[in-house]
Image (cartoon, rainbow, N blue to C red; front, side, top):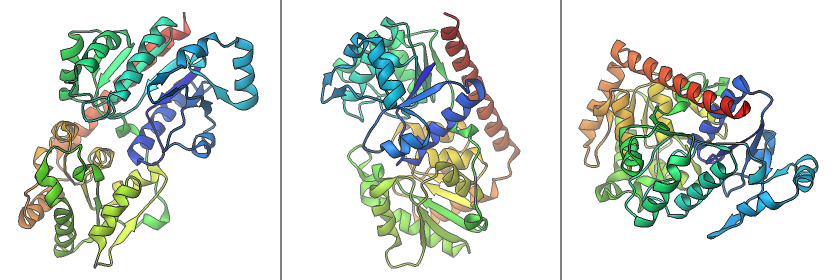
Length: 383
């Protein structure tokens, strides 16, 4: 059985954390399964090869879609490519687990929706399984996207919306459907790791930036004006309450640029780790987190670490609602005094039994999601 894990990469630590979440479950349920990963600007050959993944040959570029021709290749040639070179095509894939996180929306180019719909339609035609793991969807207002999605989404075997807003956006396209369910972000089940270098983080507050907060994707213009100032204020607040501020780069060069702006004129440390399991461990060992990266927030909230967040997409509001901490989201006009109050309140409430119950419930729901996935994949195995 060949399983493609789609939508993951190795620069964004949240996307890589989703990959590890999938790999851990595949090892649990189908240890003999083969894994395929597609190349990308943030998914190098060496990174994919280290996981023992087969390399999926990309046959689509700039609107030119040739994946359908892979089904015309002789089986002998495809077998030679696989066994000798480690290369596979779409025709070799049995199951697609789409862990894109947030790729299908008006906030992204329409090419993502075009590719998604084509893959789902071809998967149905060739009796393959396409599963959309919990992720954010929508909004969808472009007429061409709506038309494509209305045709393709009912053909997917399972669509997992990550929260109510995403569920609503998909429901508006396909209505009541047995393949549309809601489950939380599934990285809450991933076991983190920690090394001696970060063993004494208990008095440190991590500040995790996100370049999307000041990009054109963020429709809240006030954030573009105030974001760097609020992060600098966060550094000052953390120092004022006697804790140690630390910047954590959760994704690449653009976030590092923000880290350097916030760090300017100070001696605070900037953490850059390549292992997403270690990044989650660092977050779990910290006193608190002030975070603009979605999976950084998940890593904090799911481990019971006090977390203040910022938002450039509906997925943040829904996430903090799920964990019962809507008051912990910062607004673009948050003052330094308000920030201090929110941080102290989050730290004070960390041992709340009510919040612990919400964390446990969400983890239980993630386990239930995997049972749905198991049922779909095992159905394929019995055909």
